[in-house]
Image 1 (cartoon, rainbow, N blue to C red):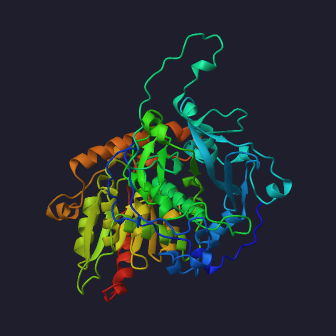
Image 2 (image 1 turned 180 degrees about the horizontal axis):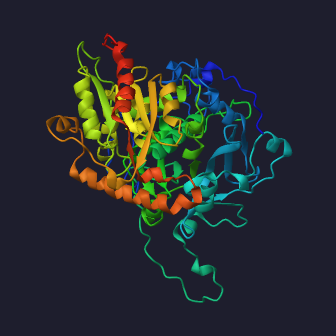
Image 3 (image 1 turned 90 degrees about the horizontal axis):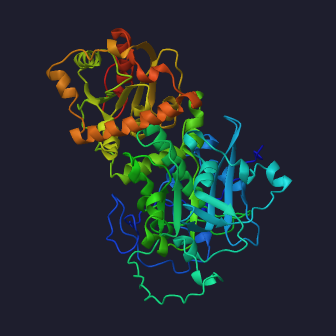
Length: 569
């Protein structure tokens, strides 16, 4: 059990949270290749820090977001205190004599009585023959005091579903062992053996002309972020992973050491431009792939592609490795079975701001007097569709002259456009599902969420997001029906106008491919994980009067928000 004492972090410590705004990118090999711009990230100052080895927390720049967040009403697991818990329970795992270093951070969660972890390795070398990184580390025995304080032994690092988490990343991509006779880096990387060392070989070595190694115009990365993803198409799964990784970087950007007086492991802006995400899984990129570049500015690269690129391997010096907090370890996910009472989340607010800014989806201009309340329906194409949805929303429009209804197939839009649609919405309506994850991108304090859950199912994740984002939240349950009984309902001009916001045919085809990949993964894991029920592939039917009652309650909630000042009755 961790020591539950909360550590108060001086304000100057929090000044180390810097929103990255640098630019650096690369193609699969980081050698002589042209650069590619990243959306909404300006070029960094080319000059390095004047004294990069001197850590002076008193001279840290003001943070862009965390300094502006209000912690009133925030639970500790959703505020910077969450970072302090990890920092207070970190330990070095290698002996002092080891050439490499490994530091892991831990936090005990009372929500599920488990410990979440992430790690930072220094001095890793890529072993092409093994297809893994080698960390020359003699693992030391943790003291009993360390273990009593919540430091997990290396062989007990957490693993999560879909074979994610630190345990699985180390198992599949990192060999941690002490080398008694460490080969030269180039021999490890290229799998070469010195034929002259064979006493049975009496032949003269062939004198070959050395091939000059071109100097890369873009230096190789210094830090690699190792990613083993749960999937690539589900917004809830993907954004929980990206959110967890962002928080990993935030913790690494804080002072290190037992007394928190040592330089941080990771510093923006210089470290971000020298960092690259390495994908360990074989999944498709998916619509959220670009977000991995917010802190790791270079284009993500798959480990299989890296290992098969001799030029890239040859130029790669010993590197740092980030093994991030898993998506399933995110406190927002752990909190989805309980009715949370947190009225604020600085961490969630910062994550939302970062994503919105990354895509340049600035908040729309203030509404003019008399403009309609925008009601956006998460329009599903395959399952968990709403029976007679066209009829319900067409009649809703006729009953409420102050609204404008949009039926949006979010999955057919690029993710940047999805974020923009959410930013422009006042009320988000949907059958329970990952599409309601977009509620975190509604404008804070000025919108509402309507969730229709399948009968007998309980989930409070979107309720809790709404509470922490100061949004109205309204829910109800509805009957599950077989897909063959589903009917879209009314057709005509009013329905066509509501369904105007859709993706292109090419985007829809790409989405179908991603959905199929995700559904295969789901089927493979369904029995083992026990997290899927029949409602995932069925549709939903709600009585018309109940539908109008819940959505119109949310509409009336908006009557005194923004530019509106309307009578309830």
